Image (tube, rainbow, N blue to C red; front, top):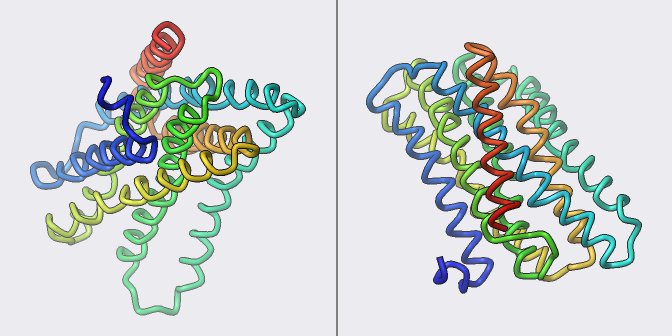
Length: 265
């Protein structure tokens, strides 16, 4: 762990998001072996990753944002509140914009299944942007000496995002395969949906390191985006097959993240 701790924060964030991309690729690789995956298992994983992401959003992002606002002599809640709202709205408006763009292209000579495929890949890709930025902001915040931000918290945040990326990769590749795409193309589209994470992570680190004054906003922005993704995508999907399993997964994920971030941080 010491070798990783001594790395430049940009490299740390890059390695962390290469991991999250790799897990997405593993999820997409499922299409080469199965036509379908047990939904109860996938939904339990979604609940578990939602628990990790919700806990990380508070202890690794939102709480440090409030502490830093106090340290910088800002109104403690103002920038974190604005950042949290803007982060949530970013995810919501991105989805709405994507839906509107695709609906306006009804005159193109694309099949209905192809449009659904484009929507699926684009929606998950857009969601991966704030997730990658959240990882970058977390590692950048540690390098900036933000109180309350820990290496274990940033690593667990990346692990939580990576875990929920596995079913996302499968969620892209399997429907594409069912719509007639080859296994290779289905896999390539599935793994490509997470390529934006390393790019957005680097952007997050650079912003944190160069503009410390807006760091409370950036931390809260990442938290708002993460909470919105969990509430809008992960939790509704996770309860479709078995509410008890998904709820148990959420409790376990939240507890693990809380213990690691508080006790070991």
